[in-house]
Image (cartoon, rainbow, N blue to C red; front, side, top):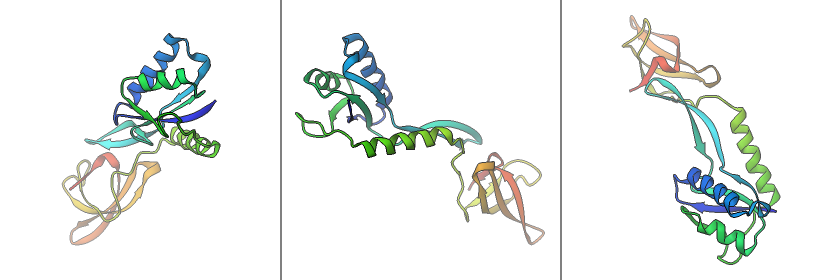
Length: 174
């Protein structure tokens, strides 16, 4: 079996994956198909002062299917609602190389292992302190500590620049 790239409508990758898996099981094509992969990684972001875990698509608009490229399997994949086509020509889809598959699977696994939030701020960005004793102060981001979910902000207190260490949730962009 080889891996093939299936182009879908962007934003419907998860639904296409579910429909394809269901069609494989109900149609009795289990022996022709292997894995159906939705390349995504887990990302934690700060949204409206709350940490939110999300799934970020590595290749928006695409899923990867392990299958034997027979006439029936190609017809089944193309008949799933939301699938536009398999990459390659209409008669002969192009399989992924083993190196490409290994690289993609490694990237997915790294995304699962890593549960660091994406840094919501960049160095030099102007921010406002929303919580704590310095609430209402504005400052500039000096350092971002993604793994600790902390940010060092330089605020001016009594005319002097003062560094303060804050949680991502305590700071809002201006």
